[in-house]
Image (cartoon, rainbow, N blue to C red; front, side, top):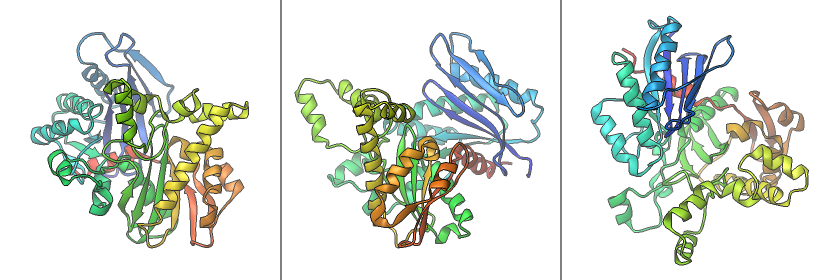
Amino acid sequence: MSNSLVLVLNAGSSSLKFALMNAQTGEAILSGLGECFGLEDARISWKREGQDKQEAMLEQGGNHHEKAVSLIVELVESMDVGSQLVAIGHRVVHGGEKFADATLLNEEVLAEVEALSDLAPLHNPANVMGIRAAMKAFPALPQVAVFDTAFHQTMPQKAFTGAISNELYTDYGIRRYGFHGTSHYFVTREAAKQLGKQVEEANFISVHLGNGASVCAVRNGQSVDTSMGFTPLSGLMMGTRCGDLDPGIIEFLLKKGWSQEQVFEALNKKSGFLGVSGLTSDARGILEAMESGHEGAKLAFEVFTYRVAKYIGSYMIPLDSIDAIIFTGGIGENSLPIRREILKNLKLLGFVEDEAGNEAARFGNGGVIAKSDMLGAVAIVIPTNEEFVIASQAAGFAK
């Protein structure tokens, strides 16, 4: 099985990311993105190992997810790797309390994933579209769902329970679920390897910073708390999402005549970096504007880094000790100024920045960026690889 390949599909409502990956090494020999599904400029781009990027427009009409998967099938067939392809791995955002592990897909499981669409209305229906298209294209291969929420199913009840009527939990499933599970899973295992520890005997605070952002406390290899909650809206400030917010603000705005749609559009798509800066949702744009003296950008930078540091500090509580704070995700892996400011906010925990290490740990390079002699811990950058997690777990169902 050393050359086993898994096709990883990550279907969004108007997009489809994919990668053909060696399930043992994580090497991707084909990767790409289909985007703008449902629009006139629907297209798909891809890159084969050792070749330049290519792009094709998708025909109008019909199901663009199916059309994209059909083109992916052609690409895979042209590479003559059929005998090595052992499974199709699907990222599914929400598994609720039903799914705590990767799961072999069939009609019964698909129905359960669809039933969870109320918890992830933008994601689960799109995931199902991608799964059905793949089932049609690869009927002989096992189709495996890997859930964003699964890693967090080890949280104790005191961490996932909201301080609300228990009927809201029993009747509607309202609780903390958490997301970015595959990312937190991957980087904590990599951190344990790099520190020469068994992950079952290691404690971490994993900090995934990107357009979506979350923090996860990991004790003995298991998630025990995480910042995202019932939806990905809670927790940290993000690119366009508000993060933690007094729910009374929602009632206040509704009484002011705002519609439900306006409120949730504002909180999901017009908040975060974009809302505070009044300029952009992109961290790179925030940093560039700061250098030009933009006050809104400076405030967005300060709010973001302060909130991340507050969460890190609070997540010392569920841990008996800590081996490392892990930075990952697009911002966590690449943004030196943001990491530096977060570390400054952690001075009470004894972290001292390794300036050379922090400057080197970017653009695909990881490494130790700070140490705390007081805690006997390091801060470390580890590039995430969620596709590899999906591929390796899907390969476990190969026939």
